[in-house]
Image (cartoon, rainbow, N blue to C red; front, side, top):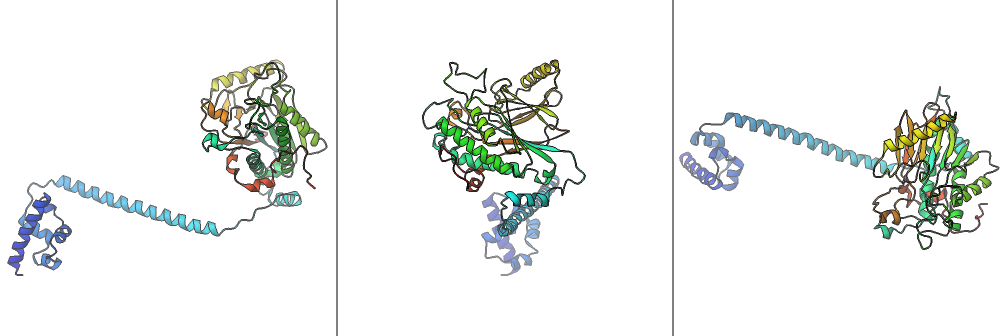
Length: 443
């Protein structure tokens, strides 16, 4: 094809395609044109000085908006650069996840069974490593409340949101014990004791339904819960030089044959849980490492590392309200101030910390001049009664912290025991209750 014919054909075809696309010839891209007219080759376009030069020579664009053109170029450059950066990050992340996953899959960790002599040897090998120069004693403190053993939660009644029975309860308590046993274990040589605030609703009781599948017989609730706490204390005393168990009953454990079936506003200790407390104190009466504090008063007055602590279930004497909806700091502070004012009036020392449960929602907060308030979660999780009154979620959580001479509450931890539900390994710590009426032989 002669050059004159080529120029004529190009002129005609460019006009035709731009009219078809509704654009000015200067906006036409070479790749679009060649795709539309494959009869032309790159060599043909070079013969006429190049595609862009050909268009500029025959279709000059008047009154170019140079500012807009430059802005568009800068925008395109920025977008291209941004796409490159994002692409590199995504490629790196994908490669990192792939490489790390491959390496982690190759790692094998053998679990340690920390019992007896093995426990002592392991503790001696690690303790003191990070405590050089530290001499101040410490205590590890945990609240055990709202565990509701003896309650049966059918997951189908809750649309799959939760399930609870003796087996799941054993798994959750086993995980709780494991976490307490290994908590800050590198500083175990500084820990004088473990303090367990066993402050109520540790059984399901017969509060909301006195018969039916939701609650086991009180006999089974008492036997099973006693079994679980005996196993828990025997496990934990291998990790701590001393264990103090501070006991308070809750509202679920109150006996319901009394004339007043409302809150136990007097003689609260006349409860099913106090039967458990007595049984535990009898079982460990000759154990030099385990001590019990059971009060007739509806609260316990306990000193930890020199700090005075007020512990109660939370349904009477000291209440926080429904902290799952709102935390009324002013109301809580008013109660704290009233209690401490009376203590000071009587010549006593003010409480530095108030510990409760009852509301199934964990909260750590401060009121007044540095007074700590610790509210525990629950171990049972959501049940049909709570669900029926509009509660949609109550994740099983128990709390713990470290107390030093300086701080009544130092490092704290929430233990998400719901993660243990399907983990059979925790049955090595807490063996599930099988409705026995006598304790099974362990030798």
